[in-house]
Amino acid sequence: MLSVLTIAGSDSSGGAGIQADLKTFSALGVYGMSVVTAVTAQNTLAVTAVHEVPVEVLAAQIEAVVSDIPPDAVKIGMLSSAAIIDVVAAKAKEHALSPLVVDPVMVAKSGDRLLREDAVTALRERLLPLADVLTPNVPEAEVLVGRSLNSDDDMRRAASEIVGLGAKAVVMKGGHRVGDTVVDLLFDGDEFHEFSADRIATTSTHGTGCTFASAIAAFLARGERLPDAVGHAKEYLTEAIRRAQPIGHGHGPVNHFWEWWDEKK
Image 1 (cartoon, rainbow, N blue to C red):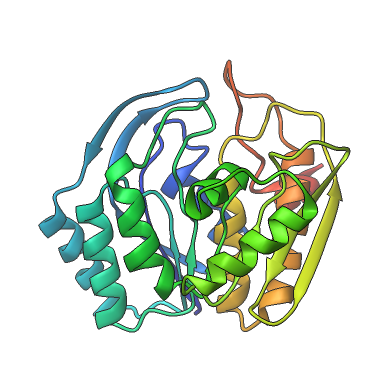
Image 2: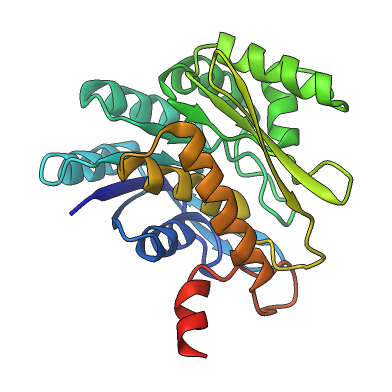
């Protein structure tokens, strides 16, 4: 059975982080495993507390999983500190973990910061060069390249720069840009690929970044080429957003099991 490992933080409400990752893996037919980097007190409204897992426990979790069930793909999410990034990068190198999908989680949907300022350099210098594909949204990409990104040309130049920093490929997510169409831009080091979908008027967007990156990892584990994996992940996430039911008082979660619900109707 194909397996995918997520290395990320938890989400109390179940809509983002490891909980969203595992739901995505199950929905897409791969076996999900997890390494917890931080426990967050989080719901659809806010992040009220973050407890980082000690680095020795983090390292032990990774060893326990990969020594027994080598993953067919790995998704990396919230890492929060430079020390945690160092451990994850070191273990990724030691065990040659690949393909590696890195979602550079910096800020929660609620606006609460999830990556310390001093960890940005560690992310850029130590983890980004290991990524088979990086999946930043616009604000995250702006932090990585150090400037505002406003136009299509800005997005393409930034994608080239991020690959120049060492990532094999990058998906520049377009959800934060304005317009009736959401365009995600994949640059694989040689070619650009665009993936478009109509923007959906909804507040059910909690965990979209986690879900998207996890879906890419799941499709890569299943042997798909990167452009196909990104395209299928885009289709899966779009329907998960479209078919979500309002939950909570803020940004509710997407419907990871929309295909299952359709079958039950």
